[in-house]
Image 1 (spheres, rainbow, N blue to C red):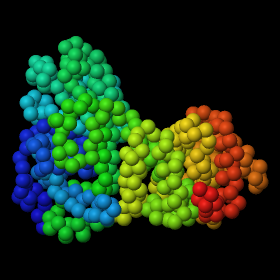
Image 2 (image 1 turned 90 degrees about the horizontal axis):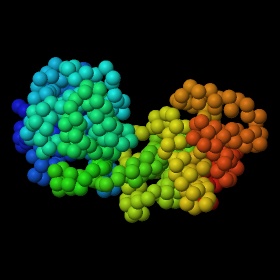
Image 3 (image 1 turned 135 degrees about the horizontal axis):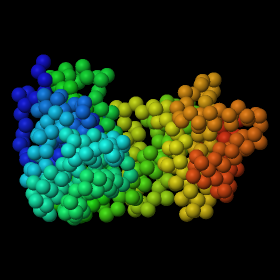
Length: 486
């Protein structure tokens, strides 16, 4: 059987190289490169991607062996129906390994067609490496490589202000564009580059913060034999993603003219301030995940989809979103409800078995960043406690006891947190008052929560009551009482 390449698959278009992309991994290929493919076929974008391998060892050779082609499977809920479809993505023109072809990499910087820089070099990728030097071929860090690349462009066009680039990082860190720009300027200072270059970075280039959202399981190892038979060719870069996608770009309105995502029917938002959208994602998508985990798992369920479909747990999660999380976010109600509906639909994806235990990792820090802000904002706005979020906190304390009936829970968290909970639970004397003291001790840990939660009026009593109910009558009955009450 032949491998996928230009001999097997004839590209419909031959667009110009408008984009340089740092990163060749699954996410960018299932997200950004797919979007470029869609824009090329559904709008007048006419742009292709030059992929730069950001680390010494990667997949550029495989990508070039396949002439930049790969198959993307999108599977999940689409308009209420489970849909599984695939396409050959044609947007990548070539890949470059700057560790082997540094001159070719630098030649791209002088391209008159180049307009965009995209990246996803993992959360640790946007970092300053003090040992990077301008003369390195290449620099170790991604920001170092980018700075050298931009300096080459600055020199090639003699600082022309119309040759700046639109730089949109996709790394999953807050204010990613601002951080990347700050490090680029840090390298300019370290390398003693001329003030004119610094002015060119500031005035000619546009660094955008962005928020990306699509679940990408990646290469389908378990089903690749079946997929290969279906396709009729071998593809070592098959990638699987969910149907849902969202890209929020914080930048000037004119970016829409250069990046015609709307004409291609893509869920891309160019906004002045992405903060509410990041809050929305963290609170609704991630917050719901974290809040439902201990409740659903202690109830006896194993996966997220089971939890959403369950007649009791499903009601709990949906009311948690609509009644307690959404009211704390400053976006139009209709927009929030639409996003929440999308989240529920994604949780029901029949093609993804999202195990509750797989999202239990570091649940204390997750609750602090994802759910505690919603809880505190609710109290601030409503003057009362959000019962479902508080119950989730009770369930989380119970979860860290490490028992589900007669079964031992394999807890995964920082060692000091596991030791802390083990000590708290081993000191419990078996009484209700002992559970109250335990809840009080957990909430008092300001070094874990950022504040002493016992100071939130009524929170200690309500967390303790939830914990007592879970321990005395079990999660199923305790949750049933909460849902029936609502």
